[in-house]
Length: 590
Image 1 (tube, one colour):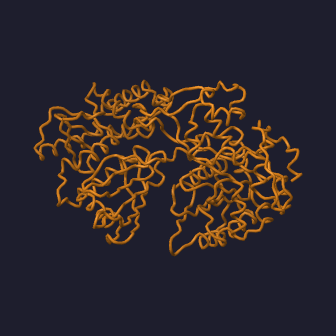
Image 2 (tube, one colour):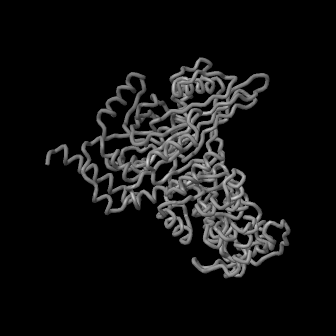
Image 3 (cartoon, one colour):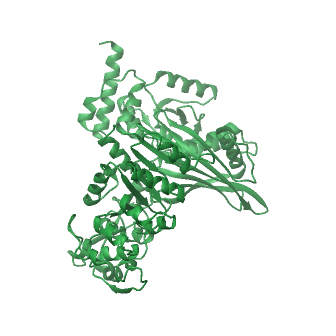
């Protein structure tokens, strides 16, 4: 073995030893890694394996004999940023690089420091994600926020902000002009808007022009709404698609564009059936549905409820199980790009209906329809399901049973609905409590919630002494002082069984059917799934109550003659759900 290869093996071994100690990889994974092609490739390979560039940067520092690792920049110390494409930063008297194993990168960094007349005594290490964060915070300070901001530097600021947002798993970046000379920068993280800092208006206006004209190739017209899209390379391993929307907003006697940038597919952690947090019963159902050769699976929920992400989780599981099928999605916009699947994005010249009509001539096996917006799209989707294709589609309704009424209003016949639909699903995304700082209490200490939920199956066995958790308002370092971190799916599944088919064909109102199924324990709604998560400490009552209609709405039994419109409501007991496959004794009586 050559001396160079021996050094690569040694450095790589030190990096993985540290990653094993930090719990970022298992010993088995570390031992199974082939020797990297070059010294510079060691960290690139390690990031791909460990999925944590901060841990890899720290490991690199240890591998080189406790080199300085920049993880937190202290206030008052000088930070000097290079351009967005460069992998280094000057911090105090240390020149920190993203890959100290890359001699060429180190040479370029030192040449930059000499050219900029920046004195330094040592080399250090900084991760790509923290470098982006430092640029987003300090870039404008070091490059000058003046009235004549250079277009290139302003655009660099936007890209650094996007990289910072991506590192925090944000779905959207908001630039919101106010009534002063400042613009609020906000990230939507786990469904909540979180203010980051303020930006000078002069810099912001140049940012908007740079994004639209340099990246989206759209001429800025500040008094009109404008849309655009572009791709940004986040780091050497990952690129991201972005959608840009601007809209004029009044600012005193003037107008400024409000800009929102959506990060498509930035955080796909929930696009995995095993990571959605499904109950065993619901997981088994979704896997079973995915093995059907044809039929319709409808996912419903409001905007932002994770409908498309959940359907992608279903698609990916289906693809892993049987990859020899033709998978095709039709979306607006395409939110994820999955190897082995084809994706079509609709636009003003290509509607959902046009795309579906063409797709049916391309021998598809599995189709995802981003949204059934109109009668024509719905008709084509059901035609596909009826003619031997497996179709997954979304609707905008509040629960699974409401989807039936929505389709009826789109002139899809009830016989067509019940004979071709496998299941209607409804979903919400709720924020997880931070496991490190959540605050515990007993259900019996909250008399209102004890009376409302205490007899539910999730709590009944504990006789009111269930331990429940709430958000810590101060949070901790692990959750960024928010008290919550990450999101969890809650889901309900109304399978169109023969009993359900008969009831609907006999004219039973879907909302009456829903209440009857809940009363009998043959259907678990969003509340049932959510209270399961409250009981095990994953989420709080507050989160669940903020996302769902009041608990009592569907917990009355409704008896009515089909089509009569006459109903009598009486309270029903909080059910213990029937076991999967156990028949409903009275559903047919509807």
